Length: 172
Picture 1 (cartoon, helix red, strand yellow):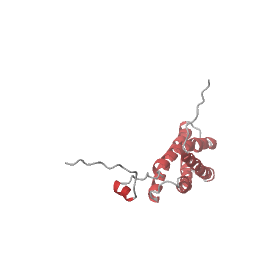
Picture 2 (cartoon, rainbow, N blue to C red; picture 1 turned 180 degrees about the horizontal axis):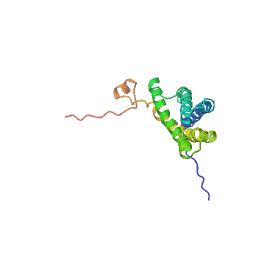
Picture 3 (tube, helix red, strand yellow; picture 1 turned 120 degrees about the vertical axis):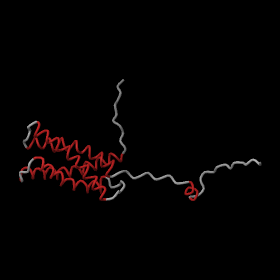
Picture 4 (tube, helix red, strand yellow; picture 1 turned 135 degrees about the vertical axis):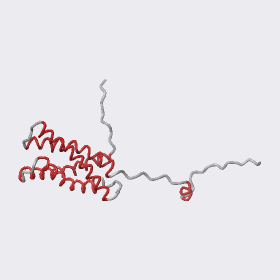
């Protein structure tokens, strides 16, 4: 008899978030790819500088899409806090991209436009995106807090609950 291995069932919410994150990321990726190549090919910027500037432009696009659409249903913890964390985690994501590009260009000597695009814009973006999704979900746009349990006094004010038999008191 053959056993079938099924992938784990993901909750619908995370599937929707991943789809939206991918869409926003796709738009930001096109912006980043276009701007990075403009910096490299038109403005003759050095590889790492062109990559960093392209990522910076795409980050502004990605923040808006992720804050208002991908994670719009999550808790709002303040624009300044979210923006600061978003850029900090994007800086780490950029570091991942730049490390991939630097290894390709400086360690492996693969410095042509195709090699730069594969290293920085395929491998680097892929690894950076995994990191970004996890950190955005966990820290930048946290889940709504669970409602706190009501104290007994508040619960009694809401009305009668289930009937509880009275205890008899023994005479002393």
